[in-house]
Image 1 (spheres, rainbow, N blue to C red):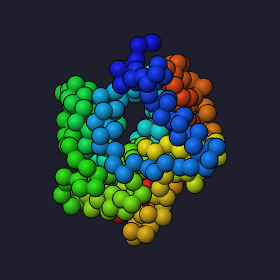
Image 2 (image 1 turned 135 degrees about the horizontal axis):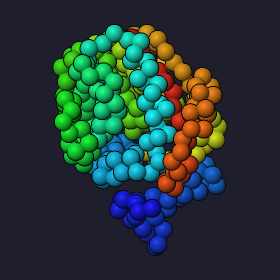
Image 3 (image 1 turned 120 degrees about the vertical axis):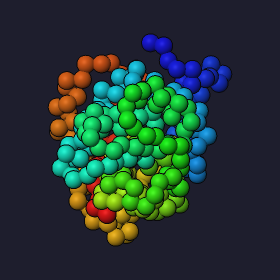
Image 4 (image 1 turned 60 degrees about the vertical axis):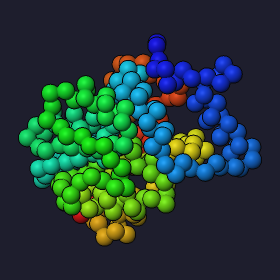
Length: 261
């Protein structure tokens, strides 16, 4: 299968991303050295963003990730809202689905990756969805502009020193609810935790603690222990092959957390 040029970059004949991860893993496993987490990932995503739509739509990743997207849709069907935005919307995969299910709702999003937003122009063509370029730490939205704010696999890119700033921005913009489908190393398997720990671009946060410290009420908090069996049944019906260098990480890759503002 052809791959996007981003993934074809090589150093001494070895794919650069594999070399980077294996070096990080070697330092951790043999010397207990963890390289610092990336403080900002703007440059990373302005490069990888060119490939991300390909990563989702043409590698078998999309069919597997839909399970978590469905968790979001199911939760939204139980909430009263008129508007919703995604923090870190990428090329618009999640917001497109939301608009299809809730056509009467106002749907928006933001992302700092110019290539991703450029891809969204094609992917969301003809849909009444407004995406903005912006940073999660400084959202270009008014106070309480949307009833619901959510993220899916995005806050793993927010450095620990900025997590409260990002959460406060979500609180400022979201009038009623905040939903995160994100990685939490305290609620995953030991195997995935050890695999991800050396990665400098993946950062874990305790979302329940963060938002409760900000005065929000937790209305839903689910882990792979809650939806793992459902995920296993879903995967039995996935027909596509996965064309990625790593296996899909499974139900343990996310927690599902919803908060009332």
